[in-house]
Length: 269
Image (cartoon, rainbow, N blue to C red; front, side):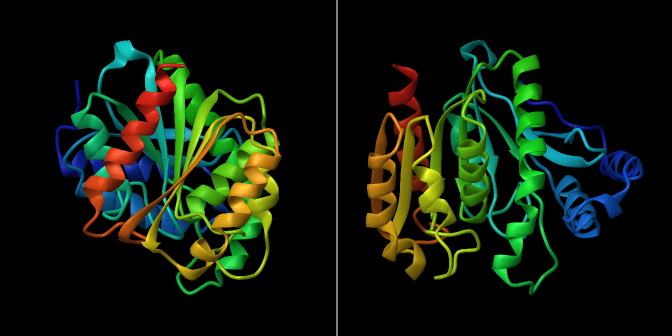
């Protein structure tokens, strides 16, 4: 059952109170920007429930829990792209709603972000903050009875996710969906961190992108496949959706359908 807060004013007060509990100076993420996103997201939230999580290092961050069939024990953790928030209208929101339509619970979380206009490669310095957020989310879902957790990351979120999994092979994540993932962190033609990490991911991987995706995503498709198949990944599937761009704009139904098919296939194993 989806729960809602009683009013926007109460939501905003709770958000501000939660943000007052931590010291942003200890974090590389732009916590002021996170706070602004949180206020905007909570104020406009129509479905799902805002929850506050703690990364274990005094960092509170926002999550959006959209509850489906809790008895299934299956949930999806959603990780957004560069600089945005856990209810972003491209990729993330369509997945939240699409998954719910099929009874699947999702928890979309705020990832570490930087100020607008910062070079994407600067996000490398945020990678150490990712593990605490994913672990906190996994703990939350585990406490709620979800033991089968699929990690779904878009763009920068996929880079952060794969970095985490390459460093934490014993995590509770059962499979991974990378949407619009390039060769390196930041989605530029510099670096191959994601390629290297793919060789170390020990869960099934679904590599999803569009035929009109960003150049760095298209150009590294073969290298990603080779890395996954040459590493420890037990299963790897790569799908290119004809006509879809990096944000799957106008192809949301195909995005949701592909992710659902992957989740259903993995659940049967």
